[in-house]
Image (cartoon, rainbow over all chains, first blue to last red; front, top):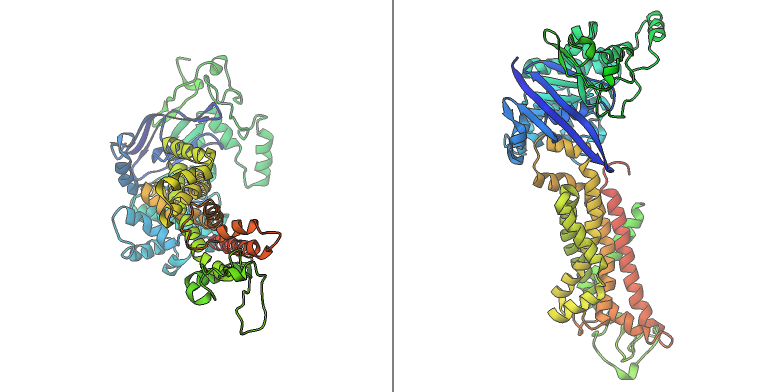
Length: 321
Length: 273
């Protein structure tokens, strides 16, 4: 696998109010160049933290973060900033990620200027080109963020992420703020940009149908851990981890008869129930798992290969268990 | 904030500034001209042709109006300079403390607390006695009092801004700390800085008045509003005009600064109106 970005043994812990909150717990994760990977899981599972740590916007408490063969955690602040041109983030709320006092032209030109690729004056042409790439008029440069609609802001966020010709784009819930028709348009835009610019995507999402359409690989997160990882089609058709199964079961079906069946089948402990009570030991899913065994509460299963190219962290798949 | 309130504030300040600049032309008398035969005369709007004192005279017969006009020079320049110097120092320290946190924040917060815990007037008298009076020392000492206003407001704003997505997004595209502070955080805190500047200028005008009363002001030969006000207190029952008109001048200037500051603060906010 031609690995572009990777986390190895990464933990993120926040101290707040005397308690230690675990954002990521010894996570190993890798993205291959030119693939579209997705990270899914319920809110609070650590998927946003994983995305931010991958770009070192969140400093890990332990572990290493590699990008293009280089250990980012060993770099100085200035050296890391120079690498940032190649690895970009799209935030969950595009409006909040735009400086309300800067025009769109300034916001888009900023990455080019701080990386010494253009001056404020000469950046105009590339800003116009980037706006055209996402289907916006060059004349919109002079406007402020609040003058745009939600869909336009999402396009601006995309333009900003790709204007410096990055290799990796981490997109945090890029579609959740958009209505269905816009989602289709933006997805198409993501695909076209990937082809023309050779991008690698990490999509952070809770929208399983969308992930199924765009991502070639998917990682399922729970309680700061990756509990399952593999090719999207295989993971979705034959989930190895009970939590993945629960997530898939919770997806509504657009056929009333099938949806009634699904709801009848839905277990009494739905995946939607938050699992914030981080456990020091044992499987993070043990309280909600229909297959829980005695050992699940005591020993956390390590992620291991369950099929070629697929891993899961569940005792059900361990021959030695 | 209604625009016309801001306009009133602007007009008040502009008038004060104009009087300060044009004092030699606008004042009917020399501000230091003593006339012992015309002591404690009430405001006189009498017939033209004879010497009049529109706002009365003080205890040694000096024209109150002329002294107020000349005094505007001190108040305007000291207020503006002290607020400006305090704004530069306080905003810089506040931004660094709020944004970088950690040790920087600990040092700046400690400085703020020391400053607030100190009896400032005593400190100012000590410093000015040691440095000697004069414009620059007085402005520097007043800035020691005003920078805290800026540092506290800016620090808390920078702390909450630091966690906002647009700051994180700027860092994500590779913006360094200097540019981040200058181009992203500073414009965001500027509306508050302007509002704080308006009341800090007012505070500086008042403090300068107190220092003038204590004899460590800018220049004893130039009248200042504060010194006039304090002198007039002794004659409040006999000559109300001696304290009332300088007080009114201070009040109108401070009001003007606050009105203008509030309006500017609202205008510089891009969202909503």
